[in-house]
Length: 385
Picture (cartoon, rainbow, N blue to C red):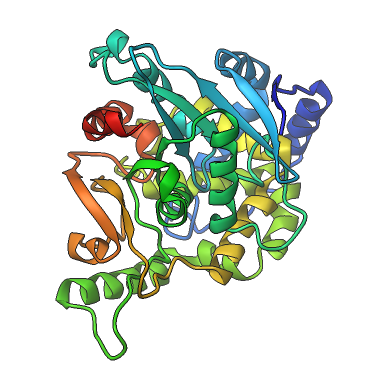
């Protein structure tokens, strides 16, 4: 399981092909004045893709990314890309940060220096972290799985093996979206390696164990009702990706405009941006993430994780309980979100923070808030490292 430095690939031919495809886009019509009512606004997409074609510089973005230390490691036959940045301080805590969909390791770039070098950002130098940010299998520069069954349980096994290979027999885990599921499973199935978990999301498939015939309490039932309504109103993407990701992939893998609209819509809907995604993310930030999906052709393999999760949901059995210390950071735009009583049925919650602002992409939207909460939670757990 050799760990090797990884140079980020750049292909001038691929960039020219992208620009050519953007120039030849066959745009759909729209109901005049409908804006975002029927989906992604046509004028917005025209402006974004015009910038993508004429001004976006992928090579410059890769140069910025190269400021971080990138590696690849083959874990149980699958190549995994990751960033590894060592902390500055007396005893940095090993910490693995896991992203979700439709994000990537890009989500974590702003928070990495806040965790590795807190003294330079107004934090406590005694609480720093050795940060590992892997790309999920089928995302970014990690390999695309070629076999069935690459679900969040398998990914947790890969993460545990990767961290041990790096010399981190005990480590902390943090994540949102799929990253929250992988982190949860690390605590559930690999507690001997886990110092604690910090989550800014509770996996959508999570269900605590209830005795046969037992009904959820009022708050639990309200959450389930709210979640059902959310999936009816906003969950079309998830229903498709859970059931027929291959079908969607033909268009998304072939058309950059289709890919951008599919991904950027989620950033607008899930971020705390009041309907203006550029209040939170610059065009370069949005398009860097989309371009990563485009250049690596990973939209299908990433969407397929929804299908695999449907086959292996996070539904706790009678003896299942995450006993390692857990912290929950609840950002106000993150919905649906279970009540504390529902989460405590399955997690050993030691810290709960109601954040004043922020949404689904917490590490990218509010890196300072998230970093401070991570540091405050893990500071007293350092002796367990």
